[in-house]
Amino acid sequence: METSLIEQLDKSRYDFMKWSTIGWTIWFGTYILTDFISTPEVPGFISWIRLLGWFLLIVSTIRFVKLKRELNWDNKMKEALDDELHLHNRIKSFQIGYFVVIGLTLLFFVLSLYTSIPAVIVTKLTLYFGVLAVLISKLIFNRA
Amino acid sequence: METAEFTNQIKVQRAMKNITQEELAAKIGVTRKTINTIETGKFVPSTILAIRMARFFEIKVEELFILIEK
Image (cartoon, rainbow over all chains, first blue to last red; front, side, top):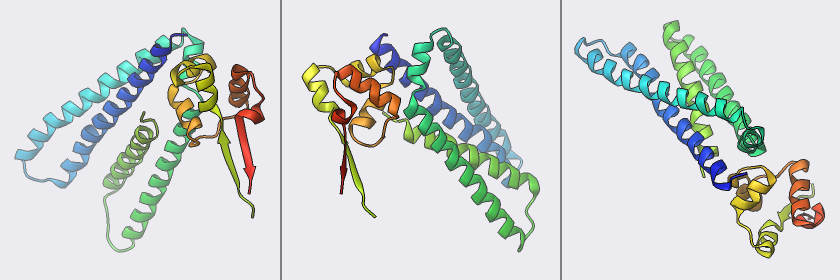
């Protein structure tokens, strides 16, 4: 098995995670931002930023899917990349995401006792920070 | 409650065989990152991985990974 190829693929995977995180942060973040901004001029500018985020997310997703399909042809390479450390880190990341979602749900529940918050905002914020928590923790755990 | 210290001789064995973390990772079927985190004690390998590493170095598992009871 090529030694440098595994490391190159591992680095590629890390790059995909990094750009996915940035893309998600920008793309979905702009949806939440527009909920809090009411002036008509700003949303136009935000739409362009949203498009950039969407573009980054789509490109990194396509590259990730392409990598996965290439790896399906080589089981040994696939096993080496998805080794026990990577699986361990993935589980930890999803655990963090789970606790972030639970924490936000609890926070909104408490807030709802004192004020009314639109359900769509609660849903967006919970989804946004839940996914972001998973992505950022994956980046931290998988850094070289 | 007693605690135990878990160490390993991977770095020593690698030096004796004159191989890098990357080369060892390729032989074992993991990434260099995994070897590094095991070597520095940040990650405890599974039994299967520990046996694979011991077999590669041609030593016993308990010679490669050491558990010191305190």
